[in-house]
Image (cartoon, rainbow, N blue to C red; front, side, top):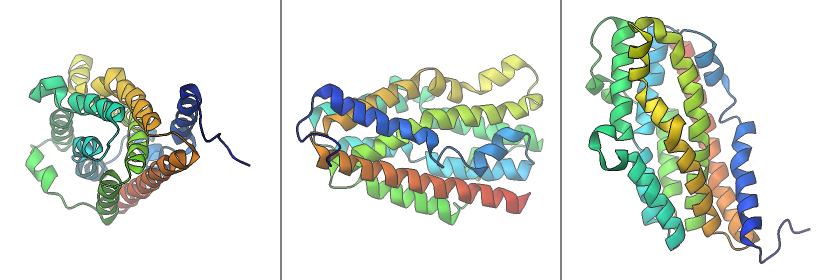
Length: 252
């Protein structure tokens, strides 16, 4: 029995894509050992350092992946949504507010406070990625350089709909380290990376990703290809976080 008709209305397409996006909340990509431990209470400096090193190694590619989604998507309407996402990633035209810049500042500062000695961002960048982090980055690039724009948009849909919930969970874990800041104000000023994403950016990115994925869907075969890219990205994410959790346990 066919799930969807060969020709569908825009509202039906949007509903199927929205349902697919919402499925991340039940997936192991968001419900896993790493998040449980990260939110559960303060971790040792070495455990936090594992997270910092591997999260940066993963996230340094995010804006590049969005750029690739522009290059590897032919549909004009979908491309427009991807460009909006990319502009946001680069601070809406302000280099100082580029998301990677804010992240690097936060991570270096957090480790410096926890260690009680300077931890330059150069040291964090130089840390070797875990095999699971490398596998994630390799698989992610394969998805975003696919010659099938539907697979590309499926991967982007997964990336953006994981991102909001990921960042809220990461922020809840960061709150375990408020004591290393001199005041609440200092803590909140340091967390600009999270507030930009949670307050606005990722909400916009989620909506944009639904629009761009729906734009490349016209029938059941299209939705199947989008789902393929979506599912593969989620599976890569599961293995990535498990690798981080395993290494944190090893260094504990």
